[in-house]
Length: 104
Ligand code: FES
Image (cartoon, rainbow, N blue to C red; front, top):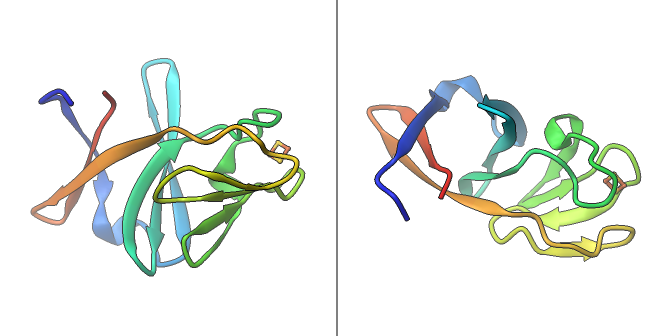
């Protein structure tokens, strides 16, 4: 992990069970506020590259809006078809009510 932490948003910018899209350079990510805390993953679903920002968060699971594939948010593990490739996850930290993401 590098020391490059990017300021993504404030903790109050994401309601619980909601998602915030974060774009950086040519990449896009999702930051989640779940009942178990905040997490970050790649923004695009690994099945057909639908953005997950419009997905549904249930507990610590994200359901893709296009074909309803599901991922475990903390680990990125693909949970149900049609997704079979895990989602990349990223480290987060919170300082002074801001969420920082490490893209390493
Ligand atoms: S694009 Fe996400 S399940 Fe198909």
